[in-house]
Image (tube, rainbow, N blue to C red; front, side):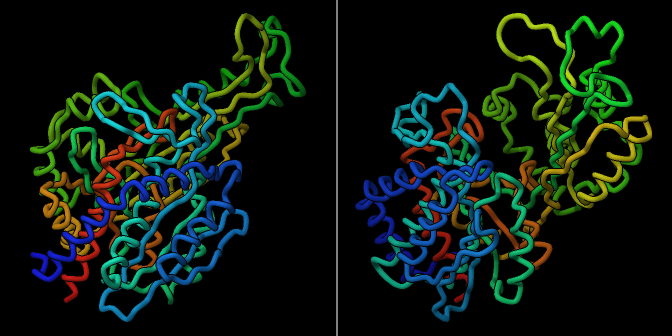
Amino acid sequence: MKTPVSYQKELRDIHEIIDRDFSEHLSQCRAFLRQPSVSATGEGIRETAHMVKNFIEGIGGSVELTGDSSHPIVYGRRYRSHPRTLIIYGMYDVQPADESSWFTPPFDAAIRRLPGLGDCVIARGAVNSKGALCGVFNALSAILTVRELPLNLIFTIEGEEEIGSPHFEEFIRSHQEELTGDAVVDFDFSQDDRGMVSMHLGLKGIVYMDLVCRGGKKGGPTETSIHGSASAWISSPVWRLIHALALLTDRRENISIPGFYDNVTGPDKKDKRLLKQLAVQFDETAFLREMKSLCFKYNRRGVDLLQRGLYHPIININGFHAGYTGTGTKTILPRKATAKIDIRFGPDMEPDEVVEKFTAYLHAHGLNDIEIHVRDSYPWSKTDFSSPVVQTMIDAYRHHKIEPEIWPIATWAAPYFTFSRILGLPVVSGGLGHGGRQHVANEYMTVSGLRDFEKFVVTFLFKMAARAA
């Protein structure tokens, strides 16, 4: 699909406005990043929700704060009777920033030159995902300096994504009749440090759990940790939890739970074609470098490697805590051990099935004293390659001289299922721009990438409108 000639000039004009006003756009993003919005603690959440509300009102939209009052969903509309309506999903919350190795304070949004990347904004949320969210509103404001927006827009911006979106599904279901549109887009930085774009057409499901083993009837101290020498007579909850974790997989990390793979679905014919094309583009060496790793865990290559990683369920241990972890020596027998794990799975497995099989397996091994606390979960999501919004995004990348790597599914998680499986709408995520170090110290976005991202958002919106015309 080609952009009509009349739109071509408007695109150039708006892209030039982004260049002209970019220092102001960058300042607005840095101000947004300086406002903490840590959903795990609630720090700054309501203040940030009001900033997003002001963004929407600033482009002439109507807004309400809904959902949980302590972590509001910012629900906005800007409707002008255009042929197409686009729902924009986003998140304004971030992970905690308590790591000690930040170059600069995590909410200073300082600019530093990073090797091979140029000037970067260092901040919690820079890439995940407040930098891009602010960039969307910068792009919309740039359009409005020239003309009316080409689409009707609905905004669903949440403040709980980093804690599993506990109120988002309820919000979607309760507003189902109002949330009518053509598609859903989650605009995000999608380029790696080489400038390559990865475009995903679905997401794996996830279940996140805490496993807790305490001293009690099956052994171990019950009231407090005791002297380590007592392990001569008293069993250890720590060892019990370690043995439980060891039962979950074999040494190659294949899941050992009987029947766990019964409903695993591999790629269909369309996805197999995408995997073959992706294998030609996929640079395994660059991917490992991006992942800060030396090798893959599977002795596979090409399509076989990609299919295994994308469609095979995994159990990951995020953290393990027990007893004394300070400096020096302290011998104790801890009364409690805790592990945080996540289980990721593709179509057609479901969270309830995963929890049921996991729980039954531990109980079958006599480990029913290990507490299983499900913190959050997302079902899987999938969008068809032939969907018009997918083709529009591909066309927008090509307008900017980039051919995207198209992944049939991704290994990360987000509440896209609420749109694809409840509302029945296709969902895409993407955009130009690069950032990195999500969830760890020195999270960053490149300054030049923010500029490219804003131009991409404009291009995509115009092409979506042109497709309608």
